[in-house]
Image (cartoon, rainbow, N blue to C red; front, side, top):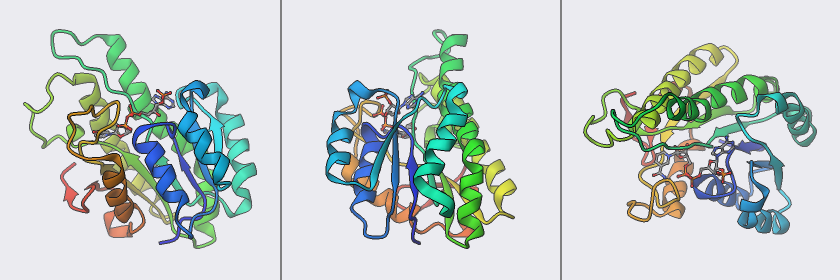
Length: 242
Ligand SMILES: NC(=O)c1ccc[n+]([C@@H]2O[C@H](COP(=O)([O-])OP(=O)(O)OC[C@H]3O[C@@H](n4cnc5c(N)ncnc54)[C@H](OP(=O)(O)O)[C@@H]3O)[C@@H](O)[C@H]2O)c1
């Protein structure tokens, strides 16, 4: 599956940066819109975009809803009327809170970044996604989720992550709803679990190197067929229970 124009949120570090890097090395990719909310944290991304002109860096805090109209215009200018083939909702945060420490603020914050923003970004960019789909080009939305948001996942694994787990469970439901609503438009929507990855969020103790996790993820992302839409898929391609 060829994804020409791609947008990845939270591209300045971790999984988002690695996605950007590996996608930019493929002959099949066109423009890669790499969004970052913090210029000062984006040294690696700025270096990468300086040597690879496919990568267009846009400043974008996914929770700054007042900027969405301008963001859509900027993206449209970059992708043109051929539209957006692939949107990766990657930006995420993880609050460490158990039953006794969880607060409305930490719940709201995780819910805002991990659930509301991916839905609102998708809603805002729909005209560009539909342009791509109307050309008959493969078009997809990928939500970077987690097995911690699966309702059949082990409760004891990570029960200190109330806000994160609740917000990722919500993202999984958003994935199902979007997949259903956008099927007539031929836009596929999946949630993926990248594995436990060595990033700032995953920590140094994690099992997977970002290079390996993303290489595996890309095999999934670049081969989404309609039968997978609405599903939660592991980095190794296994379909997981939502
Ligand atoms: N690492 C793992 O083991 C693991 C496992 C399962 C799922 N995931 C998911 O994978 C995704 C990427 O995680 P990661 O491990 O790469 O984490 P990370 O290294 O902590 O990176 C998180 C990224 O999200 C960005 N971000 C956070 N809030 C944002 C906002 N409001 N607007 C725009 N960007 C924002 C961060 O930008 P700043 O630099 O500006 O903060 C950063 O680029 C997340 O959705 C995470 O939940 C990770």
